[in-house]
Length: 66
Image (cartoon, rainbow, N blue to C red):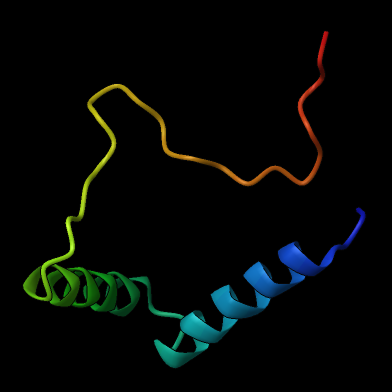
C-alpha cells in the first residue's frame, strides 16, 4: 500500500478521535451528534445525502478505468 500525506493525516485524526472516545463507537457517535447540533446552533446548514445516494468514500487505489 502506498502511504501518502493525506491518508496518513486522515488515519492519524481518526485514531486520535477514537482514542479520545476510548474506542467506544457509542461515545464517538454521541460526540458527532453533539458537534453537529453545535454547528446547527451556530447557523451552519448541515445536510445528509439524499435517499438512495451513497456517501463519499476514500479509496486507497483509484478504480479501474475500463
